[in-house]
Length: 124
Image (cartoon, rainbow, N blue to C red; front, top):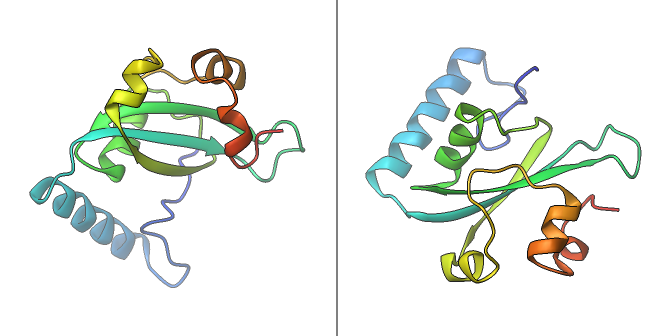
């Protein structure tokens, strides 16, 4: 599977070396000033037909958004596509008894948090 471009680091005018340097710099900033917590990562592919665009959600504990995305890759639970992320209240995740570090389908999300998929872009 081809890795998608990092929206945070990509710029069509940047060379691959410049992108890597910027990505490394952003990871270093997260490491130096961490915001540890749960990150909700929602994956979608706008190029797929309607009804197939949503690829899943992963909740990961990390010191920042980019570290959460990297951890998803390391755990082989990043399905590709584009990723949107949000810092989440861990109490909300634990109350719903959602698993961490697991790729969740639309049906699984509805099981843990009924109605939540209505709030996620590209979920039909």
